[in-house]
Image 1: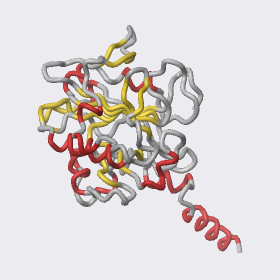
Image 2 (image 1 turned 30 degrees about the vertical axis):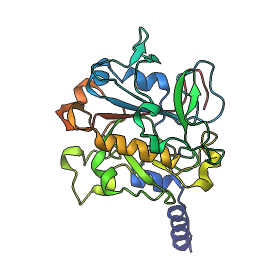
Image 3 (image 1 turned 90 degrees about the vertical axis):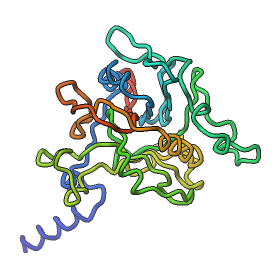
Image 4 (image 1 turned 180 degrees about the horizontal axis):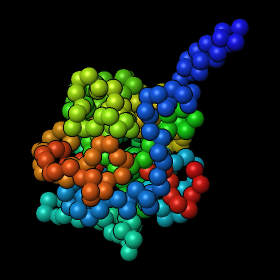
Length: 285
């Protein structure tokens, strides 16, 4: 009888998609870092090495006044030709502002991707304005099941290409995947192959069908990814697709926060960084 009860209990645990046992088994990372912690790791050297930066605030609820980016929103910012700096920083190397001479969504997207006058209400007037910056609403992972982890990541362009769908009715159109491996000391980016591809992160920025738009910018709703408006994500994807690969500081995909001693030798890649954070040190999330 005791054995039957134990077997039944184990079956119940592993049948639940949100169970702690299953999360640990798959190596899913739920590390949440504040904006301050994450941007301390976005060094001036990384800023100089990369050209396009995608920031996402995965926190939910009210945002502190004058914060860098509101909860459940994304900021896309890039360098203009001839520039090697985008951000202003304080004495602790924390990013405080973005140069207004930078590239923003309206600079990056072709005219075809900008909102049309007959668009439905959730699209009119986008991208939104936040302290003079153009931002997009997102919905990130629910905390009770699959939270969107935090950190600074290279774009996993090969996976983004392999998994691409341009159908706006698909749940994950034009997905841009983060370059990150689930934490497992037995596998690192140098030994990644077709036999352990399940260890690579499935977290992506992607478009979502219209029935999900009502939650964008308001609440967490996904299984870890960052959902947003498909027209804008499609335009962003095509902009990145057209960017030539260049020499960049390669990050170690086993860690969510880059450090100098973990940096890999420079190599050619899409010069795109994805920066995910969960609110601010002064904010309880």
